[in-house]
Length: 426
Image 1 (tube, helix red, strand yellow):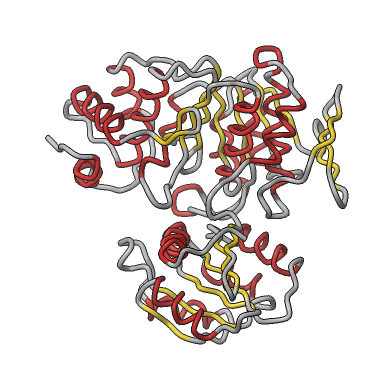
Image 2: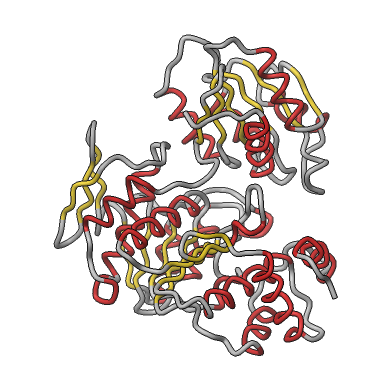
């Protein structure tokens, strides 16, 4: 049997023949064998194409500011696997995760689990024994058939719906929306964080009988120059600007607040804690800025919707110098759809192959072909992110800006690059 956390993670890659296998039968049966313990008194599930991690961060900060003991299960991680499981703001330790994996292995028998399913079950076990007030469960892929959906939540959030993971979820927003609405339950608050969700999501929510709460209809984010307010059917609260920088973060924070408002009967309603959470919530590699010369900005944008948000932010942050992009992507991503929104705001493109990071990673030559098909002139191409970053810094002037994005693998490598050079926060 594996001994260390690294051994366990290597072993989990071999147990199931496929990296992704959607469906609840296998993981649900193992969870039943483990006793199906409730992970917390209150459970909130968070799904969506983009904004899930930020919304979890807002909820975690708001609830902890109110004195609640909170568990957060997110994915993927950036620098350490342990980031995926947090209890009361602290990442799970190696020994805790190994102990949970040993219990799962003893229970699964001949049932094959994926890497993600092992991690989901481990988080649920650690939460169940952690004495939590609230568990926050981020959906990994889709919703209806994602392992997280074995738990019936007390409220569910779908942040946004856009094209991503089409091989698994469908080729249009309606199909993807139906899959994501699968985390909703009959009579249970279902918060939708975007004002123009696809009809497929709304139809599926109605079929399920969810208690639907829509942005722009049931709750509102009124953004002003220096602050903003959240309005529900019976309350309005004034709030500070979100600590997270992207223009979409008001919507993510508003969805988080809508969930707390829906659960106020059991969790109470604390506007002061909500405001502190909005002002302090942090999530790595979400427009994370480093005080280097040139400035480094790291973002996990990896699909067209996220790229449009990134482009909007860059246009709102003019500078005297140039903007350089360090970009890499996985082979199932819409590279053209990611690159095109940024074409006018990026001056120089430095490409990074990700084949060394993942079997799904674009090798340099294939990535170059895809990027050029979008009409983009490429400065240089590299085998890895670190080399692309080094080239970008060598090419850039002190007043320039370097933006590293396109994949969690790019973001992780850029964070390691920044740490190795002792770049401080901007």
